[in-house]
Image (cartoon, rainbow, N blue to C red; front, side):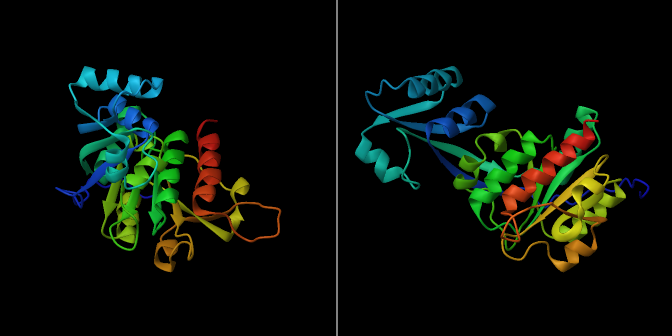
Length: 260
């Protein structure tokens, strides 16, 4: 393991934001409860649904502006087609920095555990991976600026609220970020079907889990910077797992080993 260095990461995310519109009762309620800044709520008028009433109570506590509108108007505002009677307009979503993620691990008194995503393009996959990262105890997720999906409303919805608890940093160069994190004491394992069985690897301690894109997997340069290559034992007629499923299987194996 490398000696820790004291350098700071460049703040790739300074003043960088993604505008968000959230739709659906679960996504909106989780945003309100997490303390996200909801600028405005559009709610179906005369709605007696218990889920919407809960949202209205939370909005009242926060002093959020609520507009009661018709279903036709909600349909017009909806970008996803399944608003469930509520749409929220959020302040621009701000990315975390890599140092924010390391600070979260430090505050928890735990060795860092970070997901590194090398080119995830499907927003549903990204949202699902953020949710898995949260549930498996990871302190944050790092994604690249280019050739990858950012934090869109679809990603936020697919994360089922995890995005409000799991910091996501966006960096210019994944390989360079891995090198800097190695200087901080982390080591890295990437998912690849030609690797060593995950059950035969030590996946504890300060660790980064690298998951590749849906089609190409982990890129050559990123893979070369990883310390271990892990495969997931399977038994079936196809030769690969969906990126978010692979992230889940490996992520929870890391959690199991870190919990021993």
